[in-house]
Image 1 (cartoon, one colour):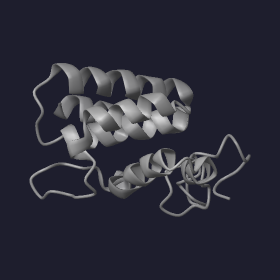
Image 2 (cartoon, helix red, strand yellow):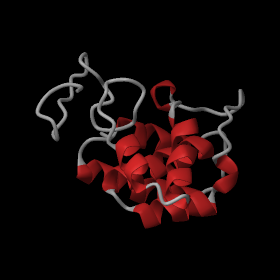
Image 3 (cartoon, one colour):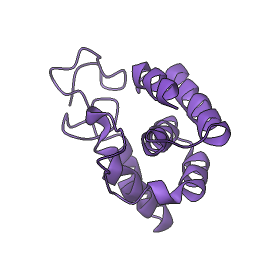
Image 4 (cartoon, helix red, strand yellow):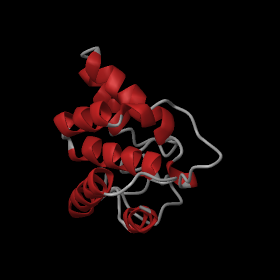
Length: 140
């Protein structure tokens, strides 16, 4: 799992091809490998990729299948990439919005391009080297 966590951590959360690779690789790892100190991270990154791809069904399936990992907690004996720690609370919030049929809030949270701690394509903010393909620049 450690190798898969490193691999998906190198892929972009902006480009659809990379997001699809994250979903496939993390899904294979979660399904086929013994879960270790990276499993929580891999489940969250897979859920993020599903949301960014617009695949609500896959996000809900990931949530349902690995629900115990989405408890908003960070464990000291588990590895979680620092820049993706906001996912610990973002993913449960996204699923809650879906469960409560708050589609507008769901969309705004997924595609929040305010340059803050959001997970949308502009999450890098003004200092990001990756321009937002949806807004033609860096950040909002």
